Length: 155
Image 1 (cartoon, rainbow, N blue to C red):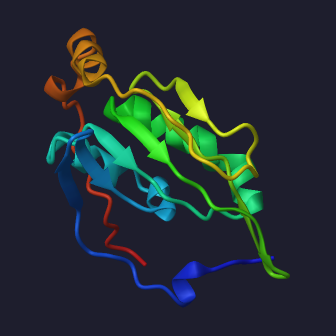
Image 2 (cartoon, rainbow, N blue to C red; image 1 turned 120 degrees about the vertical axis):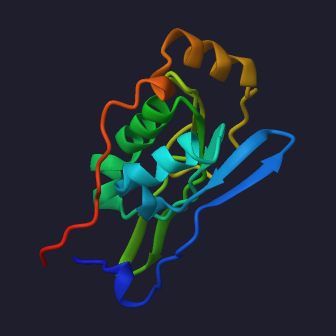
């Protein structure tokens, strides 16, 4: 089954960050996980500390990609990632993977629901000093080795 959300949803065109008591939040949606440059901009240009990723990943792509992409985004940005995920069968044509979890800036899952189809709340302490410690030990923001343009001029 093919589920092509782009056939009925328009993509946003703004990078959104918001200051909160939990830190500087970078706001994204699940499909954004496919575009690491967005997360790089949230961290390096907008100083995000916590990346929010609400999701309705399909069961097939969720099984293959959900957790690994979230952990990659946490590691490469050195940010916390909070991913709230819809779970279960919506109708005969659509089923969401689930798998709500919270990941620290080192890529460790620090909270998750008991199983991927659970409903509830995952809770974790976000120690923002952990971000500073990791960024001090591995100062990737100062290295900036590559500048890549992701827009292709060819079709």
